[in-house]
Amino acid sequence: MNKEQARQTIFEVLGEIAPEVDPATVDDSSDLTEQLDLDSMDYLSWMLGINKATGVEIPQRDVSRFLTIEGAVEFLVAHSG
Amino acid sequence: MIEFVLPSLGADMDRAKLNCWLVKPGDTVHRGQIIAEVETDKAVLEVECWDEGVVEELVLSPGPTPLPVGTLLAHIRPLEGAQARPSPKEPPMEEADIVPPSTRPSPRRETPSPPVRHLAHELGVDMARVAGSGGVGEITREDVRRAAATLIGQEHRVKASPLARHLAGETGLDLSTVAASGLAGLVTAKDVRAVGQSPSAPPGPAVESTEPEGRAETMRRAIARSMARSKREIPHYYLANHIDLDRALRWLTARNDERPISGRILPAALLLKATALALRKTPDLNGRWVDEGFRPSDAVHLGVAISLREGGLVAPAIHDADRLDIDEMMASLRDLVNRARSWRLRSSEMSDPTITVTNLGERGVETAFPVIIPPQVAIVGFGRVVDLPVAIDGQPVVHPVVHATLAGDHRVTDGHRGALFLDALDRLLQEPESL
Image (cartoon, rainbow over all chains, first blue to last red; front, side, top):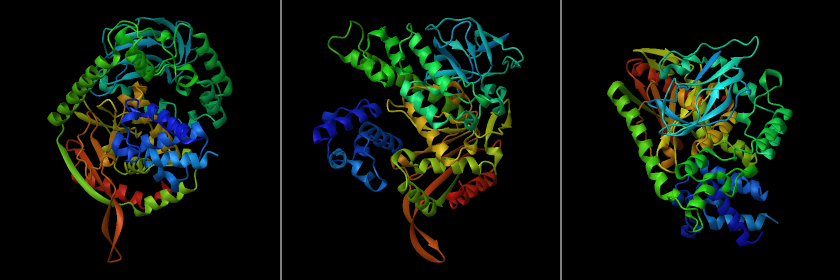
């Protein structure tokens, strides 16, 4: 999975949870929960959706990498083989 | 003959439009089966039937006219040997008392095995709509396959989420013309909105421009009615307590470290479970105020305040919350939040909470002072978990601490009872492994 594919998957899943989000307005390096008003359940559902879509497991110690789009993309590219 | 009437739909929701039937005359219905979809000011709700029998007649057709709670909707012929439940004659608020908790399908009893759940997921079948034919009503693989076949056979009914159906209804959009993106060909609200925004959309008012504003207004009115009634009628008292979460969060983190993401537990599930168990010690906080008197509830149906992304709030119940283990509590919470945010709540979830919990800590609030939702008699609030100095063996150490609050109804309890509840809550959270 390259960066572009990872980013696309990430936003597809995000669209299921927060349909009103326009990817063009999201700052890739800022805290997502603050930017998009996600609560902990939204955040968990988003990571679960990414896990289901890609098969990539997200260990508890790496959850904080998903606080930004940038971090999530990097993690997926590194772990999706 | 059983009269199936429009059930109570929660505080200050006394009427609803019949959106659609999910059964037809001649169909056999089982206890707990969802048989219709209605729409109130606050939500689209799936209505369960609490009797067993065969649908004799659908008295009313779907339509835009709001119907009062108690309106006769259908006649159901009881199955041979089955006991018919008496027709509700009580006022709306008492529906939950008419359906005693003991007659509800137990969450444990209904939980299907993982292979059955997997099959349902694969076939796009909603387990809540499947009647179980196995022992004690358990759903079998055969039940799921039958339900999937029925879905395919329902050519006249496009598979769509309730919100999608509502949005399409507002604009007269034919759902069969909408490209579906959901699981197993389900048309989602996003799909309908996409049609409304598409340049090639059929003529008609744009969905996005009209719907959210109207919906937000009607929901605000419903909340205003309920909260004004609460402040007018309920003499609130408020108590607060700092609870040290060091042990609970350490336990949770260690547990989550060992699990895949699908098995992880959020702190909210722990707080809900502890609340449900603490109520066993103070049952006079759990129930409803009806006809100038308190009616305690044997079952703990824990209302959970869920904010909606479009604005507004709903507080549906997790049934029998004190009987769920921590994994079941987490699964129930996740399911409830997802369904609330996609407009797929059930009528019983809205009508029968016996107490509510609001967790405003998510939004950075340190202390919540919640308002009781009538006819309930108490509400519990949790603030943000903050690091604070606490004294351990006379020494100051910094621990994660949550501010727990209780608003109680002085017509039923005094501060002393409320204090016992907060104390029990604190003790339970110091022994997370027993939750």
